[in-house]
Image (cartoon, rainbow, N blue to C red; front, side, top):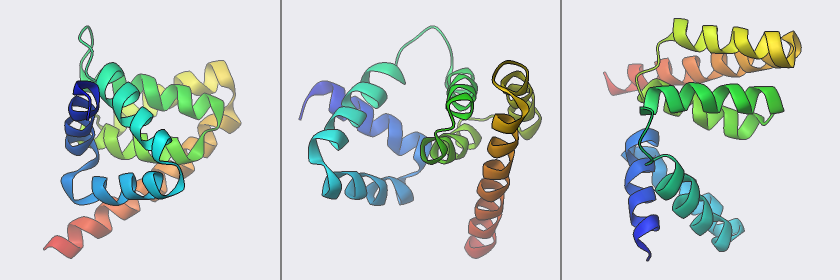
Length: 130
């Protein structure tokens, strides 16, 4: 494994959660092993680990871009990561207002619906742990 892959794996494990990352990577690996390797190495190991901005800011940028592009699968994962990276709901709402202004209210609405799902799943996980 490359240094980028190991760094990316560690980064994603932190942001996605140790209990969830293996299933996600297994899913990618089963479908297309090269895709899994590239996502972990490039996105996780080279992009998310860059300096310059913190993970919270990087999450807000990511969810805004994904919402604007209508990439719902990646948006869901990145909303989960945003919460794990310390983003508050008011900060996410403000990012989605930026989406509404520049990409349209329907894009922001779709993102809010996805956020609602993420919040419900997060609350269910918290309840199950108690």
